[in-house]
Image (cartoon, rainbow, N blue to C red):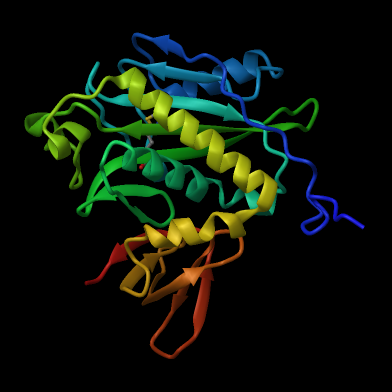
Length: 265
Ligand code: BTN
């Protein structure tokens, strides 16, 4: 008897992510904050709604940091995702999104590396970052996710040095300008492909491609967890939901769901 295509994983037949035409804004405080506001005003806002800003005055980064971008030069956008994945599986979404940004950069002949959980680096310098925020509709109990992505595109040396960590941009890597809308379209097509794969087949289908581009696999790292505790060891892999597996000197493997990672070598 032929096997049902979803028999192995018992997953729901996945929906396909279809991005809506991008809504461009000249200036926003933050595309994540604005999309959040749009969701509050209309909880039925469509899956795959995308907004982009030519300028962000209060870009938000992870862990309450700010995200600096240059007006008209960089890509700052957010999209809304309604996923069927269980909350425990949703932990892997930042890795799925990071992988999609990395593979889209490869089509532009840039070879980024991934730093857990969601940094996109070129030669150790940050090219792009992403921020995943969950929203709940208190009336229906329904939830949605906002994914915000910032990519340094046409930022030159003088401007990039204002970022508080080593950073790079496409123009600095390739010596020519990139049209923002075309780069956005490439990223959106890779996002749709990888998010569809993740929803259909789970994180097992993502993990090998992510690890292949990982900056830290088998390297000495330190991880500062949310309580400020530092754990040192070697990155030995990823868990089934994208958790960081760190093996310490005593040979004990720790499974970390969140934290800030530093490469020690
Ligand atoms: C990080 O690496 O700290 C995450 C940075 C995420 C920045 C993007 S830019 C578009 C979207 N809007 C925001 O305010 N933040 C995200």
